[in-house]
Structures are given as C-alpha cells and as structure tokens.
Image 1 (spheres, rainbow, N blue to C red):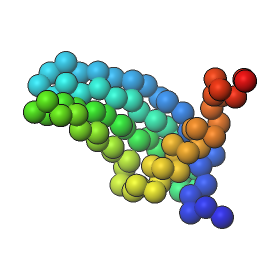
Image 2 (image 1 turned 135 degrees about the vertical axis):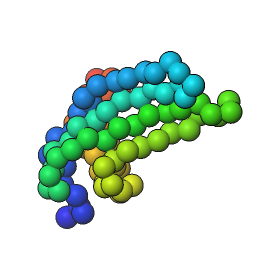
Image 3 (image 1 turned 90 degrees about the vertical axis):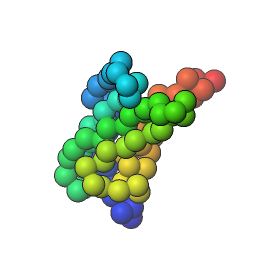
Length: 82
C-alpha cells in the first residue's frame, strides 16, 4: 500500500502577478487519507533564472508526488486515443 492514498486531485485556479517577482502558477486541491488541502505551485524569475516554488502546507516532497501522480492517473491523455 502507498504511504498516501489520494482520492481526488484537481486544479483549483491559476494566477499571475506582474511585479518584481514575475510570479505565475496554479493551485491544486486534494482529498485523501491524510485529510484535504491545497498545493500551490509557482514559478518566479530571479536574475534571469526561473525558480519553481511549491507550498504543500508542510506535507513534503513524496506527498506532492502522490497528488501529481493521482492527477496524471485520472487524466485523459490525447495519446490514449491512438
């Protein structure tokens, strides 16, 4: 059995900020065995380099992977039609 069981995961919204950080990203919502919550994934530009930030409400890297895996498993891929 996986460490985390994710029942549902989807995109809650997208955002973009035109300021000194040039931040943009999206927010995921999830429901699973540890409860429910949100993950915010954003990208900023700093000194001409893009940096990815993930706020997982302190759930950790493996949990974020489990949520993203659930989203991919539930998705309809264009290449599945061939």
